[in-house]
Every structure is written in C-alpha cells, then in structure tokens.
Image (cartoon, rainbow over all chains, first blue to last red; front, side, top):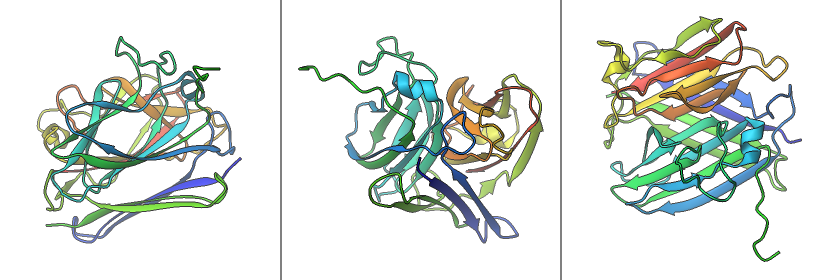
Length: 154
Length: 141
C-alpha cells in the first residue's frame, strides 16, 4: 500500500477581524479499511476547448465498487475571466476560475457500461466545460481500481 | 478587499516510482475578477445522529447567506468529517440536488466551488445513525 496525504490550508489576515488560519491533513485510504492507503493514481494535463461539455473522468464499475476515490482538479489558466464548469451526473458542482482548484471524494454512485457513455445520461461521470477561452486543466484521481477495457484487437 | 488563500498539498513517497508532490495556492476572488471575496460563514460545526438526508447548506432559506449564492457568483465550500475513521466503513455522503458527489470518511475533507441556485443545496446523508460531527465553511460574494 502507499501513503498519500492531502493537506489544505485556508488563510486570511483581513477577511475577519481576527486571523483565519485553518489546516487539515488526511490520509487517502481505501474504503472499508482502517489504514490501507490507496495505491493507484491517474494524473493528466489537458486543454479543454470551449463549446462542448466533455467527460473528464468516466465512471466505471470498479470505481463504483470501491466508493473511495479522490479527485483533484486545477484550472491553470491565468486570465481571471476564464473558467470551467465542473459537473457530475449533469449536476453542476461549480466553476473553477483561473488558478482555482478543487479536491473532492468521488464515489461514482451509479454505474454504466465501462467505456461506453451512458446514453440515458444517468451516469456519474465528472464532466467539464470551458468558457471564455480554452482552459488548461490538470487533474488527478487517486483510486482503488478502474475497469480496464479489453483491447478491441485482442 | 480581503486576501484569502486556499493551499493544497498532495504528497506521496511511494504511490509511484518517484515521489509525488503537488502544491498549489488559489486566492479566493469574486467571479471573473481579481477582487478578493469579502464574505464567509466562518467555521461552523454541525453534530447529528440522523441517517437520513438533510440540508447542510440551504440555498432556499430566504434571507440566509446561502440564498445569495448563484452560478454567476463565486463561492467555495470546505467540509470536514471530524469523526475518527473507526473501522473505515462509516461515512457521510455529500450531495448536490440529491446527486452524490462523494463520501467523506472520518478525518476526510473536501474543498470545491459551489454554484448554488434553486434546489442546488448541499446535502448530507450519513451511512448510519452514528453520531457524526462536521466542520464546514463557505466563502462567497
């Protein structure tokens, strides 16, 4: 198993009358275990053009089975007006403007046929659409197994 | 304006052949500007023993801070399950409009942009009726 930690620090000296300083660290464990670390990782960098809502992370039976995956996404653009909309199962989570990041658990709560997007739209893909300009996205998923696709020529 | 930053650090010495270290800091701006966010709920704490879905952040509550949050504004949400991990089977599911995003096990946290809007409440659905405590904070304009 691997040991992976995620730490967040929220800071401000002038949002409130007193300093805001919050820090939290978590270990990325497999679901249903007390201390077994996730040991699989995907890390991507992609340029998202405007005009289309894309599947960023496709659900799979394996992701669904574990219920303990974590997703990190950052918008690497620098123009503050550029943003992407991040959705799950067609439900908008929110907008990542240039420089913004998010870190969420991802349980992939429903399952469609691996490798084939669910025509009903009733899936748990993580989707992304860029607005204003194309956006450079980096994203990582820490997980406990994906459904591997059999090669079409095997 | 205020300057509020959110920094993430992801570290692992053994998830891959080489060590991994990712660190990024976001400054929390109002939507599409470089003007700092000026409003926050502050850090809040919620204790519950309810195994059914309930609203943690209720956009529909008239006059509330959450009612101000809409898609064309900027809002960021931090939630942490501060329970112990226990046997690793107990979690709270976090949902938007009853669509599950993911599960926070004891000790887990999440940070995400929130579009808000009608029916886009952030809901919690616990695995069981075990007493659970969440801490959460919303930064918004």
